[in-house]
Structures are given as structure tokens and as C-alpha cells.
Length: 157
Image 1 (cartoon, rainbow, N blue to C red):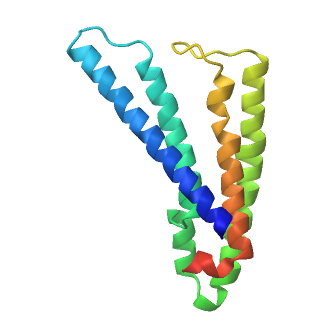
Image 2 (cartoon, helix red, strand yellow; image 1 turned 90 degrees about the vertical axis):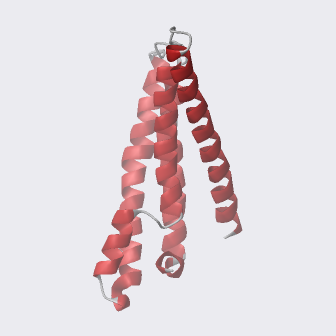
């Protein structure tokens, strides 16, 4: 429980920081385009990367907060007596998806971008760093799902 709260708090700070950077980046893009009539070359790419990170990390965060819409809808459709079993089944499915697609697939994507030295067009950073978000978010999603498998009553509250 304490570890979960610490991870929640860290994720909250990271997401707020990324969102703040995204807002500043977009504001600078608009300002430089319309005030200086010379749009900044890196802001569009940075905004895309920040949006990806906010979206995917945010998805892991909402899994941890039990606010993921599809999971909630499935639990509402079953009888109260089978909700614990359904919650465990859903979390096992989420672990399987996060492991195969996000962790394994995301790690492969990130590693191959590093191996082939693929760089972003405007920022000139290795895209492997950008794609590291997939296995990181996948591991967070797996952690939260295992937490709710071990503590199924918390996932129903």
C-alpha cells in the first residue's frame, strides 16, 4: 500500500510536469508563429513526444486509480457475488496485454531504434528514448494490476 501510494505520487508529479511542459511548448509555438512570424522548428515534434508520454503514462496511472472506463463497465455488468472473480480475471488480462504489447513490444521497439541509431528529425535525439515510455508504462500497468489481483477488494471500492 505504501509503495503504491509512493508510485502514485511520483506519477502524479511526472504527469503534471510533462503536461506543464506541453502547455509551455504549445504556447511558445503559437507565440513564435503569430508574434514573430517565425515558427520554432522543434516545438511541433516536442509537443508530439510530450503528448505521447502524457497519454501512455496517464493510462498507466488511471489503471492504478481504478478509473479505467472499460474495466469499470465490465464490473458493473456482473452480480456482486462474482465481481471479485471478474476483477481478478480482468487484471490477469491487463497483465497479459501489458507484458506482451507494452513491455516486450515496447522494449523491442526502443532497442531497435537505439541499434539503428534512429534520430528524431527536429530535436536530434535518439527515438529509443521516446519509445522507452512503452515498457515503463507497461511495467507500471503490470504492477498496478498485480496489486489489485493481490488486493481484489480494493479494486471494487
